[in-house]
Image (tube, rainbow, N blue to C red):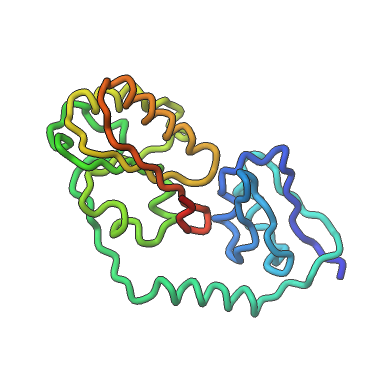
Length: 210
């Protein structure tokens, strides 16, 4: 059937994932750093994703497409809710503040710590974030894309002034999170220390990729 459906301009798309988060039907995903329409029958054609795109990479077109399958969408959402039901969320934050820009590099509470550095979006994308990542670690969060800074200098001072046992970075699969990984690698090198560093990448659907 011919119907109204979204179209994504891959040349404009930066892979930020905002459209995928805005799509209530799960029709959009990030593949190889670009937003993709995963299933025609999941797209209702209402366009909640359009205003979420900062690059104006999404538009409507009229084309041959499968009809919107509301029952399939509801079944998918119900299964997702079922998987996360019955779990009581508990906060495991043991330090404050958590924003990288607010932390003084000489604060002693990071000495001897296993450190979690989290890209902002990961806490929202991954449902069991506190239990799987925050528990047992001191935490710092930030987004180089939004803050418009390179965190390498501040993290270098933090690593120099404290005996950091290990660093875990949680980042999204989108390209803008690459700045966080680069800053940590740079800071470790500049600190002159050998600190074990692990990266966990999370998809916009909330799944661990690596």
